[in-house]
Amino acid sequence: MFILSKKEEWFGNIRADILSGIVVALALIPEAIAFSIIAGVDPKVGLYASFCIAVVIAFVGGRAGMISAATGSMALLMITLVKEHGLEYLLAATILTGVLQIMAGYLKLGRLMSFVSRTVVIGFVNALAILIFMAQLPELTHVTWHVYALTAAGLGIIYLFPYVPVVGKLIPSPLVTIVVLTLVVVVLGIDVRTVGDMGSMPDTLPIFLWPQVPLTFETLAIIFPYAAALAAVGLLESFMTATIIDDMTDTDSDKNREAKGQGIANIASGCLGGMAGCAMIGQSVINIKSGGRGRLSTLVAGVVLLIMVVFMSDLIKQIPMAALVAVMIMVSISTFNWASIKGLTTLPLSTNIVMLATTGIVVFTHNLALGVLTGVLLASLFFANKISHFMYCQKSYEETSSTRRYKFVGQIFFNSADRFSDEFDYKEEVKNVIIDVSQAHFWDITAVYALDKAVIKLRNMGKEVEIIGQNEATQTIIDRFGIHDKPEEIQKVMGGH
Image (cartoon, rainbow, N blue to C red; front, side, top):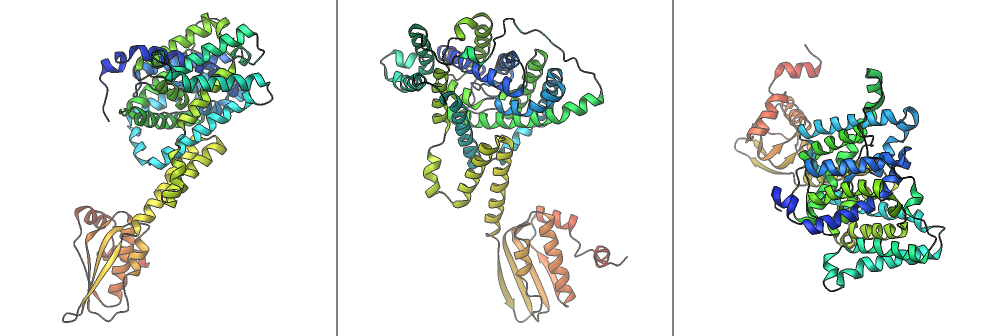
């Protein structure tokens, strides 16, 4: 992994960044309109948001080449707010979402990504690939054969055009697909669903709009739960997408800077009449697959999007949805981790359970946060269970001094504490007991409680107990929370005063 310089981030890949940005802009239009419809707002709210977020994040984001805009996962969280309180409250919630995300960046919550295992990321990626494909199905049901033919032709161009000598490597095949299929539909007059059928396009540039809501605690009580959910889901999806693009491009990203950048972008979006958004894995993959690598590609995507929907709407409306469906199917195929299918027969069962659980929950609930949190929880439980098995005890007996020595090796925490306690023979006729923890580590108060329980019980049976070999961390946690050498604390536990 390496980090790009500022000059490389902006001007290290100019031609490919511009072309890939145009492709992304074309793919953003129908999705922004669709997400606006999901949220229950005018299409221009999603389009303005996509323009604004993409442009702002190009400058302040923590990951070059990643595309951020209005997304479906965020739109789903807005439905009730828009329905019950209207657009103005949505704009206020969007601004508050940005503020919360900036706070998250300064609190360095990006480091929480270290708790997300590779298996969870793969499950998340596979789920998004499936959702991207499923989102195209409405465009492929109850349609004429022309749609299937155009979609098949689009996929053919996408996968075969790169093999054309010279130009195949210069022009992104998704862009060629969109242009060619649009020309075919227009010239032959084929009656198929187009971008224009998705909804009306804005005919003016966005202007500064401060939400017209009362600045009261009552307003805060209304918008805060939505803003908190939007901020959490937005950051989670952005961090996950950044991790995926890191792997695809073999570069690093700054997650905490990304959190701040997403916050600034959402504040700007709310002030320009747009909805909250975050990183988009589909469009980000389109950008990378089309050759985009730098911040210029993200900037071009936002600027070209606005130019096209405001000044070139008559042309954009004629793009057949089949062309964009073909592009998104390519994204779905490229996004899915096909090696994970082979891994079902070679990887440990616990690994496959985590991956499948993450994928299944995201697909069936459309809740990215719930799926990832479930995966992280399962991965943590499996890890704790695996680590606990490495704890064992070596026992020895010195007959001359009537001393039983228990030497513990491994990690002692909540999942291994009971096994620690069970190693002792409390009824054995010995005078002295030595508990050697020089090769063990106590992690939590459950482990300390297990030690207290064993020591107190052994002493009550008339044995002299000595604990030796504590490392500094173990000694600290035992001194702070242990009670076996504190008579007054033992009295309290036993019911005395």
